Image 1 (tube, one colour):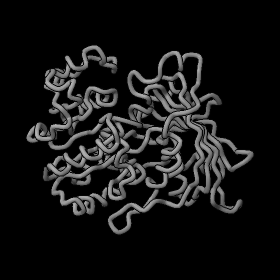
Image 2: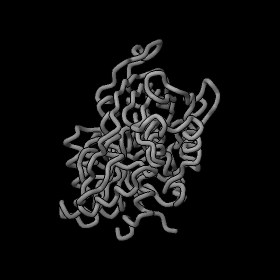
Image 3: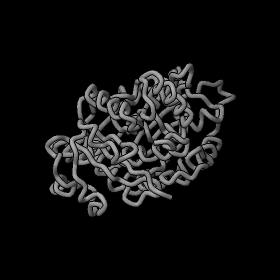
Image 4: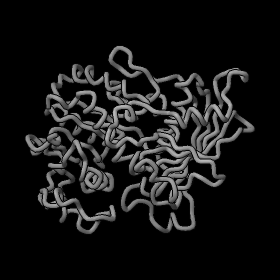
Length: 366
């Protein structure tokens, strides 16, 4: 099949570089356009990232000699790509306006940015959980008067490790009333150069700006329903979060305690919970989307797992790994979950969103 030509906005940044690397052999998409800030514009991509290529492998040959354009010059993208991945690092209002500008020019935007996460006709997608939310795109286009363009986003990386497990339980008839989540988040989540080494070596930072709010609230939109062309948030679960930056390069870990919204005699056993997680499969697995893990949730039984260095690459870095499932003395159960923040939580999660959109026909007439 002919590959769809795609662009990457914010291509020189950490997430943008991850997009470039992960797309190098993609069966459906091919990077043909790169854009970044004005200081990188006019340079070949390999020259723009020469001293700060962070992925640990050579720059893909098909992208190395592409000329970097100014991301704010939307006209430069016309005819060079069919849609763009947005890894922009700007103010939220600037990002929102620029992404809308691309959509208005018939270039769909698959975004990692948070600017449009709370726009009620913009789907915030985890394809295993809410693929039906793409239906709001029709209303989004109508609202803006857009023809082929639209915006779709992915959620914050801090909640990726526990969203699939709690959705799997809810889907099987075990709704969750409330949760306490303590995240231990990798330094790569802060971008590059990120947190100063003096702050991270031999240290834990118990505050990450905006993370607790995102962790507590984005879950409600992801679990919400489409009504009248808009996404209506779910009423629960109630989440209380503690978000910490820890000296790990990649892999966000979450310690979760939760209470089911059920009478005691209706709550699942640990064996039932593990069975639900182990058997969980959803649209990306059924449709065999290229970036989807074969098993979205991996359960381990060792008393000291999951661990970032040992488990973050499970399922190509796209699986959630769970361990230490046990009873909770305050709520009902507790467990530890891990996801790869720069793959599932960032670029590869964005690529999976694009694969979902393609499979649903949203790129057919570009």
